[in-house]
Image (cartoon, rainbow, N blue to C red; front, side):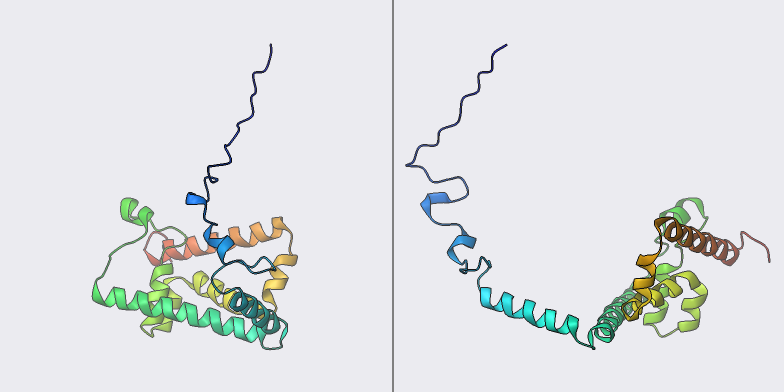
Length: 179
């Protein structure tokens, strides 16, 4: 059996497919000598240097906590505004179609209640989500390093236990489990 491989020859009078009309591509026309791409390679280099200096500073972990907290706060305020303007109803597909809550039920309510300033209602909606949120918020201060030092088996066990506790809480909250 013989192979009939023939190399494709591109005539030199045609530009390559990524360079129409023989002009250099966008990135080639604005490339810096060090290979940085974009319209302002000096700006990109400057921002990378600033971020690297910030990451090595003693303010890096508190800064990350502040950025995470600000992001979560914005999401909570938007969720509360959406809830106040137009109640979307039940968002969980399992609960909507079966009437039974899932372990994550109440997580959206946590954000909506926190955005409305109802901390107690947020904790009652799903205490596991609140605990996980607080852990993720403060992970840059050292807790995140502890998590990644754990074996995959231990991480999976912690996640499974948290999901089981959350589901039992939701079943009790919606009246499926008596006191």
